Image 1 (cartoon, rainbow, N blue to C red):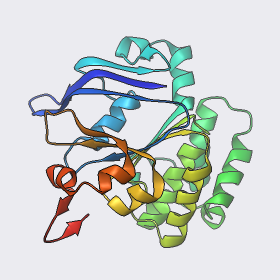
Image 2 (tube, rainbow, N blue to C red; image 1 turned 135 degrees about the horizontal axis):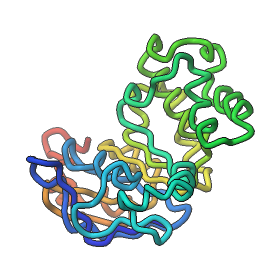
Image 3 (tube, rainbow, N blue to C red; image 1 turned 90 degrees about the vertical axis):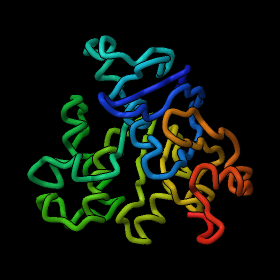
Amino acid sequence: MIELEGVAFGWPQAPAAFAGLNCRIGPGEKVVLLGHNGSGKSTLLKLLDGLVFATAGRCLYDGVELTPRQFRDKAWSRCFRQEVGLLFQDPEAMLFNPTVREEIAYGPRQLGLPDADARVAHWARELQLEPLLGHAPFNLSGGQKQKVALAAVLALEPKVLLLDEPWANLDPRAAGWLMQYLARTQATVVVSTHNLWLAQALGERCLILGDQRGGLLYDGPVADALADQALLASAQLYHPAAGPK
């Protein structure tokens, strides 16, 4: 479903975020993306979502290369935006509608889905947002904003979920609900974190990003990675004095 072939990316006038990334992620896989702050996890998720594009190599979704030209195909782009959903690390970057109800409904309505109201009702109930549907998202707490942003992504019922530190600001109940949902969903999931406990609880496979301008340090079972202190230390995810992050 997702293929990276020698992918590199760098922002203008900045060091390359990464280079030479190669991997394949199949339908229904649950993959944890690990790396220290600044390793390029958020950038990689944006690349998989077609918000930025590889400066070298190829990034493919369902066999189609993600390029600016491809996204000018309106029918294909509409399908991609429904099938691939990205939750930003900062929920405020996603919230711009006057009410929570309109925020959750925005994606389905933009895509012309006939059951937008039913989707709003379902995900508001699942995430316990029903009392807040008439509220302005900007007046909510950090955890509430995170749940609204998550509901807005899940309302599209995408085939691929790209989640950037999705547990940030969530209370234990909401965090537990999300863990259970991700464990049972049939969607392909790529979730970034630097929290090793969450990685162990969620995924079967992990990708570890290393220093800038490098490729993947590791691609394999989560349990094997977490047992390798030298690997975690090289990825700046472990220090003997502090233990794993």
